[in-house]
Each structure stands twice: as C-alpha cells, then as structure tokens.
Image (cartoon, rainbow, N blue to C red; front, side):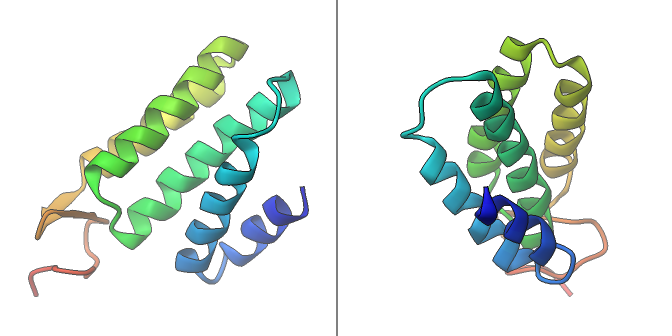
Length: 115
C-alpha cells in the first residue's frame, strides 16, 4: 500500500521512477490472493504502467501485456468506467508515434526518436 502511494506521488515529477515503482507494485501483487481490493489495485497498476510507459517510450508488446491484464481485472469486476479509461490509455500508447521500434508520446523525443 505504501509503495502505491509513493508511486502516485513520485509520478508527478519523475515518470521513469514512477514506472519502476508501479512495476514493483505489480510484481508484489502477483503472489497475493484474489480479492476485490487486490484486483482493483491490479487494474489500477496496469493503468498506471500504461500511462507512465507511454511517457517513457515503452515497447508496444510490453504495453499490450499490461493492458490485457488490467482490462481482465476491470472487466471481471464489472468496472466499466475503469475499463474505458484503460482502453483510452492503451489506445494512446498503441496510437503513439513509432520511433525506432518504440512508442513515444506525440511531440516528445524519446530513445531512438527522430529529431
């Protein structure tokens, strides 16, 4: 729970660090039992990974993994609002400009970006 709070806080100023923190949250949640609260956190985690991954130029295949996983949890919970937010976040990454095999936010320069 504390790592989730830290990841939310650091994400305001350091997207690379937030991405790593959310990856750690995801790893820690993999061993936790299924419950409504845990599944909500898993879906939230996937959305945050998509958001920060888009900012940091995440590979398309990695984004797909997080999107599919988060969407599964949101759909199982019947949370249509979160499902739509996840689809939007994934669409943003998948619809981003491809530069050097990586996805980057439009108007940014990321690893391998054409200048």
